[in-house]
Amino acid sequence: MRSAFYLLDSAPYGSEKAFGLLNAAAASLGEMEVTVGLYGDGVYLALTDQDSKGLGVPNLAEILRAYSEIRVLAHEPSVMDRGLFGEGLVETVELADEDAFLEAMESSDCLILV
Amino acid sequence: MKTLTIILTGGPYISEDAQMVFRIADAALKRYQVNIFLYLDAVHIPHLGQNPAFFADEGELFKELAERGAVIRACSRCAAARGYIAKEDGSSQDYHDGIKISSLYDLPKMISGSDGVISLCR
Image 1 (cartoon, rainbow over the protein chains, first blue to last red):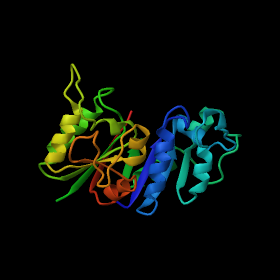
Image 2 (tube, each protein chain N blue to C red):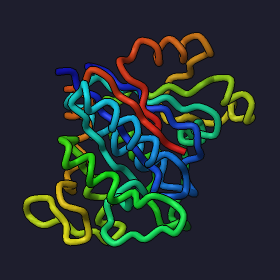
Image 3 (cartoon, each protein chain N blue to C red):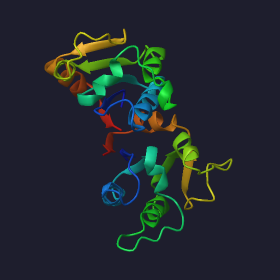
Image 4 (tube, chains in turn green, purple):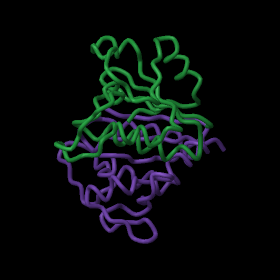
């Protein structure tokens, strides 16, 4: 396996899923090509200006920025459905329409959900 | 021999995932090298001394897989967060024999060396 697509479909805070997915994706960087796909509520991870201090957990947008080698796709219909289209997104995040998102998943050697 | 890696994130009993992984690995071991990576709450699965009233002891099931040659590793960060401390060789006094706590970096190594990957999560 030379590439992995990590799919996140849950919100960045409230569970360990997003943090766990980012850690696994970052750990995979030296070993393979890594794409993170944000789908459904997962697209909230792409928002800039996150402030997690009140939650006492790391700011996940900063982790996303720190690993700019990870290709990050945000599912555009999910962004639109949540009224986030005009919101600022982390600069490393690419918007992907339905076809582009599916294409990125299909072209990866494996799909990993956390 | 081909290699199958299974990634599991859910803890024991809250869902059927651990039993599904056991069944998949049970069948796969007849033809494949099997790796299992326990991530997030799945690090609870190898805990010793489970005594479920209505289910099979999932720690014992995974111990059996390890005895049959499955390589089973638990994420060290997730394990430490949940109170499981690894000895120098990766074993833990809280875990069944043969199941080790290891670095998250073992996950991409398992994946890159595999012919197939299955991930189960809720």
